[in-house]
Image 1 (tube, rainbow, N blue to C red):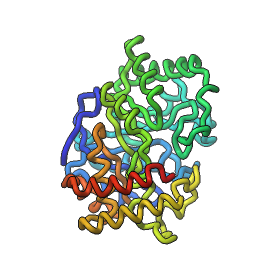
Image 2 (image 1 turned 135 degrees about the vertical axis):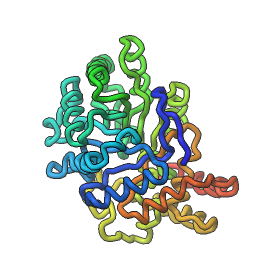
Image 3 (image 1 turned 90 degrees about the vertical axis):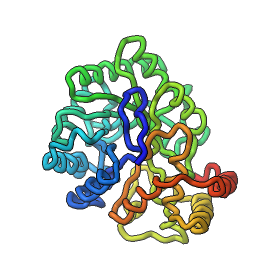
Image 4 (image 1 turned 90 degrees about the horizontal axis):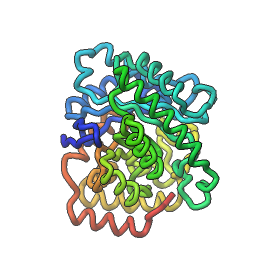
Length: 350
């Protein structure tokens, strides 16, 4: 396993981060335990979760994934120090999470305390804002005209961000969290938080996790360049584009129990003709080089300059073993050249 530094935190994390959003819905406690044990045995020391999980989110399952991780931690308390544990506070919009309210200083403290209780731990290594209070160009809102930035009151947003940082600072000083980070945000969001941290001597955002894959590269080059030069770790989530890059949804297939068989909060927005056409090409390349399509996509993500750790997820041990194997050998120049040809034809398939 290779390791990278988590931005300005100074902590070394495995270049594979074990995602957990299926635990509690598609995966049971014993299955999650098995995934954790196997990942740790392979050198993974980075686990990501959120108060929102499992997904698709629902009021009756809310907090379920953190509870599962907490149960494992309770049984393995001496191993807590071996894990960089990340969680997230949900942004606005869900009625069953603080009445769909925006993130505030008060809700940060409330969410941290609730997550600590579910996780059965004294501290969270990386506490992230799952999405910002303002509408950001994520979840299929990256096309021109989907978001009107000119309608945003930047002064009001900046004041909200300052309040959030101050609350995060109180949690750091209380020993409840060690570092803080962002998710589903933009260069403006990153830089505003960094500016406020410097101006007010508050904790620095050490990371950001955004969707990034062969089918969705909108963060390259501008946001990733920003991360590299500001020492902010870049953590791609959904490197298989919701599982489609595995090839399992080709030709109209819908495997029982797969993610697309569940109702999605934002719809199955990745399901387009261009998505499947591009995926079919990547599957052909993978076969030619004796890789699985998932391994090709994950290995490609890992080699992108500026990527710190790629967040993977699995619903079976077979998938987890396959995915972890993708990080053992880099892609050859010939593979990258073949991938580039397809990417040029399908740069923005959804």
